Image 1 (cartoon, rainbow, N blue to C red):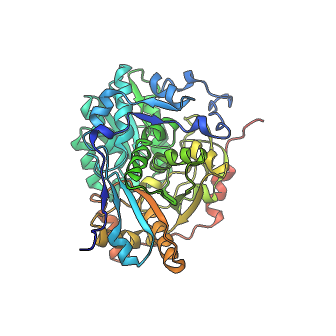
Image 2 (image 1 turned 90 degrees about the vertical axis):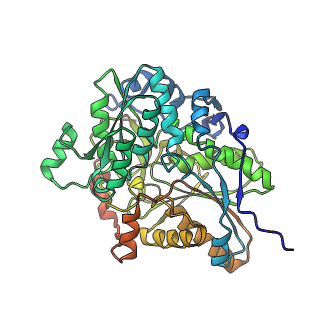
Image 3 (image 1 turned 135 degrees about the horizontal axis):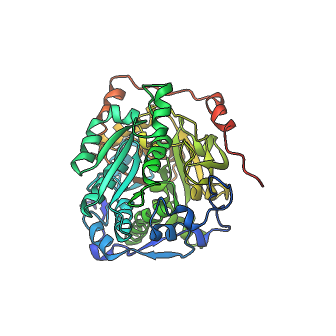
Length: 456
C-alpha cells in the first residue's frame, strides 16, 4: 500500500514557544532611530508615553534577543496556538509541480487572523499600566476585530476608526468588531480635526490607513486614561508575531525539512516579519539558507517603488518620524480589496532589513491574487483573506517555475487569515468587476515631494 501524503504538522500545547524573538541584536547594523515629529531629533522612550504603556515602549527599543511571553498571554494564546502547518498537497497536484508548498495557517484564531498574536499582549500590557480604553485604526477589519476581541477578554473599551472604503464594502467586519464590544467609526470621520479637514474637501473620501491612524492617535494622545494600539509596522508588533516563525521552525524540525523559499504578504509587515524573522536568525547564523521574499500589491508598492526616507506613520503628521520605504504619508492608495495592505509605508525594521539585502520584494496585481485564491480554495478548502492571496500568487508563480525546471523546492508561506467576511471581494472578482490600477510614477510624485525635510 502506498504511503499517504503528509497534510499537516501539529504541535502540542506544551510545545508552544514561551518567548518572542527580537531580530535587532542579530542584524549587521541597527535600524535608524525614530525622530520626534516636532524637533526632528531622535525620539526617546518618554516621547512615546502618550501613545503606549512603558512595557511596550521597552520592547520597541529593546536590544534583548528574547523576551518572555507573560503567562496570562500564553494562557490566552492556547485558545488557538500552536497553529497548524499544512502542506498544500492538492494544490501541488493541480499545478503539476515537484515543489512542496507549506503554509502556516493563522486563520484558526478567534478573530480569524494572525492579528490576535499582538492584540492580546498589547491589551494585557495596557491593562497592567492602568489603561482602560484603547483606540486604533483598521483597514479590512482584521486588526480591529483582533483588538476588540482582546479588549473584551480584559474588560477594556475599544474604539476603532475603519478605513472608509473597507467600512463601506465590508459591513460584516464592522459587525464582528461590535460583537466583541468595540465602537467603530468610518474614517475619515467628523469626530476628529484630521477627519473633518479631509471631509470638507471630499465628503466621500475613501480613507487610508494613514488617515485612520491620525484619527485614533488624535483621540488617544491628550487623554491620560486612553492609549493607542497599532496592528503592524512597529518593532513590538513584529516581535509578538514571531511566535509564528518559532512554531514553524519546530514543525519543520519534526518532518526533517528546511524551506528553500519563504514568502509572505506585506502591508505594514507584521505577518511577514513574524514568519520570516526566526528563519532569518537561522540564516544569519549559517544554519540554513532560504530565500526570503516579501510580496505587496502593485497599487501600493512601498518596498518595490517607494523611497527609503524618514516619513510620518500617519497622514496628519502626529506620529514620530520613521525611516522606512514610503510612498509619502499623503499617498491615498486605490481602494483595493486587500484593505490591510493599503498603507503608505513599510515597517522601519523590515525596510532596514531590505536595505541590507537580506530579503527580496515583489509586487503583484490583485486580479492575479484572486485567481490564485480561487485555485487555493478549490484545492485546499480554505477561502483566504485578500491580503495573503498576494503570497499565494507568488507561491504559485514559483511552483510553476519549478514545474518548468524540475526543481524540488520547499516553499513556505503564512496564510494570515480566512476570507469568510471578505466575500464581497470575491463577488467582485467572480462577476468581472475587479480591475488592476495601472500605477505610474505620477501617482507617487505629489506625496513623495511632500516628505518631511530632515536635517543631517
